[in-house]
Amino acid sequence: MTRALTTIGFDADDTLWQNEQFFRMTEAHFVELLADHAHKEVLTQRLLDAEKRNLGHYGFGIKGFTLSMIETAIEVTEGKVDAQTIAKLLAAGREMLRHPVETLPHATEALEALAGRYRLVLITKGDLFDQERKLAASGLGEHFDAVEIVSDKSEATYARIFSAGGHDPSAAMMIGSSLKSDVLPALGAGSWGVYVPHELTWSFEHADKPQAHPRFREMPDLSGLTALINEISG
Image (cartoon, rainbow, N blue to C red; front, side, top):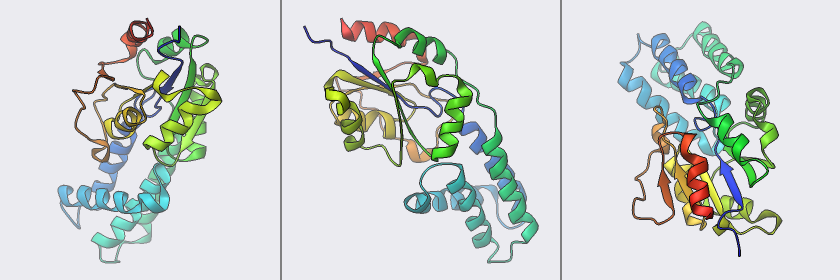
């Protein structure tokens, strides 16, 4: 009898470890630095617009965010932003790259319980060097059979990753904090999609829950993951 599940995919940022909180902290600093030029709501919206506009050029991650802050500062000051402010924005970006990794509750226990029983794959977007740094610092890398740092997450991305080694995407599950990037495209590839919401989620990643989809599940944290997988695997 074929097992219902053979491969378990995990998102990294805000699923296994904290991430978005550092972007929010840096955004608040950005707003403080530019407070004389525009209101908070204007600055945050202009920054978000720049981030979205630049995704195709810089991709996801801290480096693209830092460049978007600088671009927005130039725009809102009509080119008059001083070198000291630019230097502070660059320093803020570097500080983000130095933040210690804080694993989320139940992440380690969930991986320990599943390792060896399933093919575990880390699937994450973002800057290659930064994601490799965070994975090494997290101490979770030893649990994964494969690590995929991708430029974007689409149905094709999941179909490729979950098909590797002769596996079938229908026997795979993706677990993550983003409906848009982790759950919906995985469901589209024929896999299971488990949504583990984080209290902070970038607005770009928001999407409607596919409540009616038979392979969609939601849980408040990773503490119940092993039981869910056992239930599905039978």
